[in-house]
Image (tube, rainbow, N blue to C red; front, side):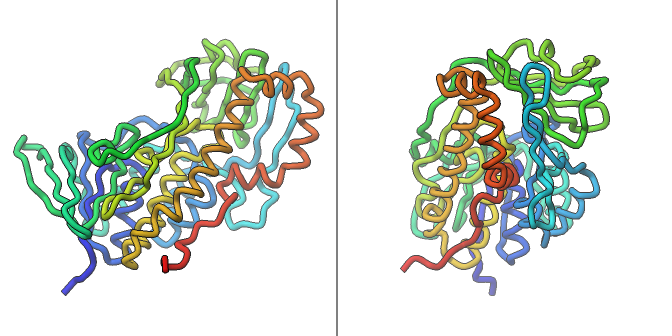
Length: 372
């Protein structure tokens, strides 16, 4: 008899797919539902860091990602049209000394394909309506099926990986405190003719804010920033071509007050959202998924909040600090720009820490010891 718990994963983004994959490989029965009709065609995240590549290695997904992606070996900070700091991501003792440029939509497909090969298919057009904790290992859920019918389903454990407007989190009344920046930001995927190095991430601090540029495929570049329109602030010798996708958004930095409530846990954007600076969002969600799955397999879900809350708070706090400087609205950000040579010198001194942070290696990922 299989004594492993039955887990319902709500949301088939990278976090939910990773959690389902880890759980399946650990022998834990899993059901994954997604209210949308299929995987997203758009990519919020653009890269997979060494931490995620390591965690996914045993599943075979890392090999697929490496075949499809392209390593970014460094990052350049620009000011007044010239590079004032060159960061090298390769100066690290790690199997994957780079950020792998790999659009989130493609990463999700690789995860979903690996999961399907294990006999677990995402149930699309299936919406979680209600979730109620009925005991230490019993969660009563109501699902709307593709047919429109309602299914009552009881799981032992539920993982809410259903995004920033998480139904799971809201149903359980868990707070999602944080703050936001007032000004709008824009992200554009656009074809470019440019002399910028395609294996480097480019970030400019101008007086009004920041512009971020990275090549995500062939001559397709992702450009993001808060100096609008951002296509008027291209770096290097760049000529804009066709726009493939664009979106406007507002920055928010929020972390859930509780990562778990009894047999229900939160992960990914349902548990934390923040600026994309540093590329930590999707990767942090994959960390959540790994820790969650291993704790479930060991019957230790009670340790999930204790392990994830401090790690996530530390990352989000650092992301917010870095974004505050980049956005150019605070006194500190103005000083950093005004005294750029001193800022550059400080970045060179702290390059090792900055490198670890960008690559997601700034804290250990382990499942610790059981709570006594």
